[in-house]
Length: 180
Length: 348
Image (cartoon, rainbow over all chains, first blue to last red):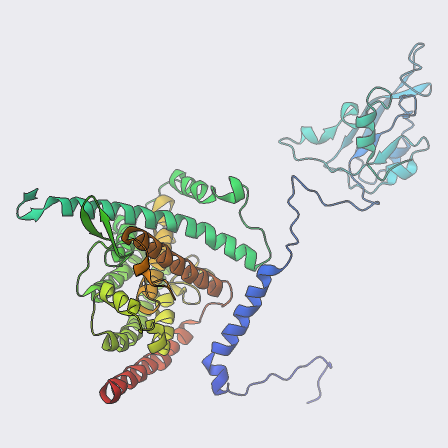
């Protein structure tokens, strides 16, 4: 009969020779293999102390950015919410009052901005849609939480620390490979 | 200080010795579980337990605490008395072996010569065999009393395995006893220490190999851990057990391992003898302590080999196990015995 594919392998059904039936040589061979593994380098990364480096294109938790003077860039235009395929983003806009120019960059700002991290698929389309470079994905991932409510991140979780008052927190939130 | 024509100081001395040896074996067994995990990890390129305490050294304590804190479940349909007896019997049988093992030569303390052996009985090795055969009752009773078909099947396997391999073990040992002419473990060790006399492994290499394989089977270690075949029997003979009863079963396996290592070291590797060194140049007490250390080192090496084999060789199938035992080991052991006998007859 002709074989259907060329992947068929003949199985060797010859009875074992005396040396093979002794098992001892193959046992010693196996034991030398396991012994040699004692001197191999372990690939383990000891997690809480050391973390694996993310690739530069990693898409993690969202951050709402500020400009150089520490003003929020978001204008609550809603383009990110429109772009979001998972419908994870909701927001409410508000008008900037006189005297708040040091808080918000433009006349309109997001009074409420929520991302549901359980819905989010971390595709980064919001980052691409944003005309103000206000939202980008950082290099951290959402930590575990006890309740579903805990995964709805509000402005207090998302807005980046002020670069003027907390430059260290700002740099940390931005991540080492993000410099836009 | 004699009461009932007994030397009470001797009784006290033996009691102290028993307490020390039992607790030392338990402590070593505790850390053997840790060593097992560590060796397994290193052979598989992993770090192993290293979080609890420095280098993970408190891990066995955490494991023990966990086992004790677990809920104690006794199945309703089990035979309660036997169910409780099982793990105790396994543990007792495992610990009883240490009574006849010569842990060292004599120590001179408080004006007394203290023999570092609980009982130097002249049928020592026969006693060991008797106690080791009792060990299978722990498995058998535990598996039967659980009223679980998997446990029962595992227990049956364990019993048949132990009986088959005890035969080959005994015949391998007879060849050794023919050369030593004594059954006392201490005398066997002292013979090997004598100048000009090599360790028994040099006279009985095949006998040692057979004894080693059978000892592995008696301890239910991989590749002979058929009573614990997880993929065929769920968990094995201790499936219904929980909490410290399960701990006793797991623990008795490690104590068995230590005891069989000690017996192999005594029978074939000179016991507390230090190779290429004359103990008589040292003061008596120091020589005895160094001897104990030498025996412990030999035990550790044996335990490492046990673990090394466990993490290399997969489990035998049941028919392979029986074929190996009855068709290979017993004929080999018989041939070894006949050859030894012929040697003694013509050259002895």
